[in-house]
Image (cartoon, rainbow, N blue to C red; front, top):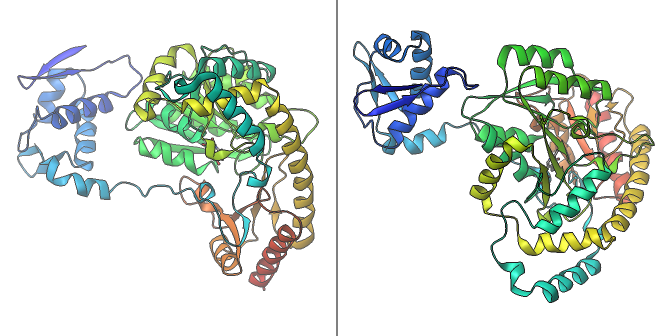
Length: 477
Ligand SMILES: Cc1ncc(COP(=O)(O)O)c(C=O)c1O
């Protein structure tokens, strides 16, 4: 529906759309201000008049005005109404009032100390010689074409190879469904960009991956969470949140969740899909580590059970393979393909052609299969060793969450022991761990730590855990 307002600003409100009317009105007015159609000092129409002219209720207009005021686009003057502010003068101030951005320490190389922080494989396991060979093969075969602008959706042969790989994991996908991305972090970011508008709700697990919280926040989304339990997210809390907030997106890690290490039962996976269908919402499944599932009965991706095109599947290989290569994949429902492609192109045009071509050969020549088997064996053994070290050195009052795979363990310290202080004391002793508060949307309990066995082994790993146990025991006294 189209409404003409204030002579020259036209406002389109879709009463049947999913975006709340007040957010639509906010977006339209904000756009008019940013484009200079409504300039500094312009007096906005009184609430009742605007409500009557647009056929919406006064409360909706008030909510839109409040949001504009909160974000500095308009200012209330007592007795007179709302005026457009000088946005150019205020833009710096507005930047300063944004929520603190999320820094991701696990993505920064650790150069000193015992590293129980990094959650990606040690550079020693990267098959540099194999990679040299495939790079040379690409250069001999494709020459300068490897360096030109690439298809924004990704190098077609690699998308075909990925579709084949995913089919083996139970996901029915063709090359057209697959989008190459520059790492899963970018995948989350472009999904947020493609799906969310300012003020939309996103539902996440509690705790959840800090990088996702940062990406959703950067889009102005409101994040709500539901607790993780041992067999997946608390479904009653999910249903309640869906009913009350109608989130546009649910972000989950159904297999080997970061940071808890928990995985969803198939019953919960199916129930989540059913709820997403009932409440017409999309799910973003982050599969960042399922190759490192050390159990016999292998987990199925949520996407493999998706009969209703509700799930955007995001695949990272960073935990297995050269995280610095910045490569990942999305499987996107047909109706969202154009949005995702546009967001990707606006983000970085395309993922580097040389990298995509090299990884394509890596997959096709069977090097990947060989590499992933050897990485799997190394980390399965270390996962067991780490569990034994934690049991040996930590007081029994520390809860070690029973991860069935991955590269980390999630720990809950006894009541009264601060995780923040423990992490700081550990750093002073030369041991780095991830303190848990980064994984919570709203400051969680100061009692969680995530410890990784990705980068250390043998004596150094033992020493790190020994010091951790010693510090917690001392704190308890
Ligand atoms: C749960 C989760 N998702 C996504 C990412 C980002 O992965 P990538 O290196 O592919 O960007 C990480 C990185 O640690 C992660 O832990």
